[in-house]
Image 1 (tube, rainbow, N blue to C red):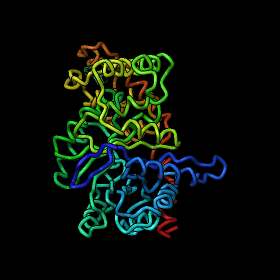
Image 2 (tube, rainbow, N blue to C red):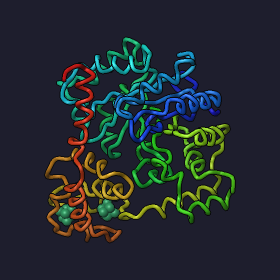
Image 3 (cartoon, rainbow, N blue to C red):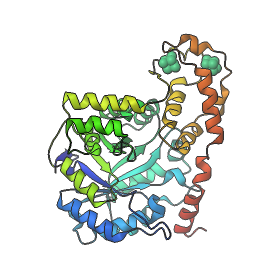
Image 4 (cartoon, rainbow, N blue to C red):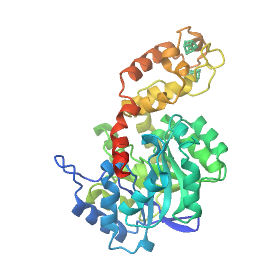
Length: 395
Ligand code: SF4
Ligand code: SF4
C-alpha cells in the first residue's frame, strides 16, 4: 500500500467507501459477512481509512461498518462520517444527531467529519444562523470529538471558491467527485486547483464515476487491453489520480472481494500513467462526452439580458448525460428563480457571441424541460427527514 502524509497522519491512498455494500433486494439488509471479509482483506492490504455517512444505505452503513471494524483496534484506522445538513427537517439538536452517529459507529470520536453535500442550495442550511451547524461542528472539533473537519462538495467551481474564501482557515480537506472524465466534464481540475490553492487536501469520491469507468464499452475496453491485457479498466481510473500530489485520499465504494483485491494491487505501489496511457484515457473521456462543447469562456455572459450563468447551466446540462435527474434538480434548486434556465427569453445574443457556435437558447429550453420533469431534491429528502426525526425521537 502506498501512503500519504497529511495533517500528521499516514493515510492509505486507498480509502474504503461504505455507500455501496451489497444488500438483500427483499429485506434491504446488508450482507455483513461480505463486509467483514472485504474489510479484513483491505486491512491486511494496508487500508486504514473508512468513510461512511449518516444516510448511507438507510442509516445501516454506519452500523455495518462498525461491526466489521470491531475486532480491529480503534487506533489502527481512521474513521470518517458526515453530517446530514442537506436532509434536515428543520433546525435540530446538531450535537444529538452527531452523537447518534458516534453510537452507531461504536466510537467516541471521528478522525474526519464532513458537512455532507455542500452546493449552491444546501449551503443556505449549512450557513444558516438558525440551524447553527458550523459553529456546533467547530465546537465538537475543539472538544476533540471531531479531529479534522471538511466537507463533501457537489456544486460548481465558482461557488467552491466563494465558499472557501468565506470560511478561510475553518476546513482541513474537501471531498470532490474527481476522475479522468470529470477532470474536464465537471471542472474537477479547476476544483482541484481551488482546493490546493487554499492549502487544503483533496479527497476524491467517485474515482470510477459510480462504476461507469470500471465497465467501459467493448471498444474502449480494447483500447486499454491493447496497452496491458491484464490491467482492469478501473485500475487506469485510479492510476490517473495517483500522480496528483494534492490528492490525499481516494475513496472506492467496494462491494466485492475481487474489487478489493484489484484495488489493492493498483495501490500496492506508485504507478503513474505513461504518456500513451494518458492519451488513451483522454480519448476514452472524449468518446464519453456527448453533451455541448462549452469551454466556459463566458463570452456569452456579459450581454445576457437575464444575467444567466450560461456556462454553469450548460455544465448542469452536460452532467445530466451521466448523473441522475435528481442531481440536476439539486444544482438548479440552488439558483434564484430568475436565474434558472426557464428565465431565458431566447434573444439569441449568446449564440452570436459563442465561438463554439452553441445554440444556447435551445439548450436552455431543453434544460428547463428536464428540470421541470425531474424529481425534486426537496421531495426526495422527505424520507431522510422522517428518519432523522425518528432517530431524534421527535416524531
Ligand atoms: S438567449 Fe437566453 S441565455 Fe442567451 S442571452 Fe438571451 S436570455 Fe441569455
Ligand atoms: S460563449 Fe459559448 S463556449 Fe463560451 S461560455 Fe458561452 S456557451 Fe460556453
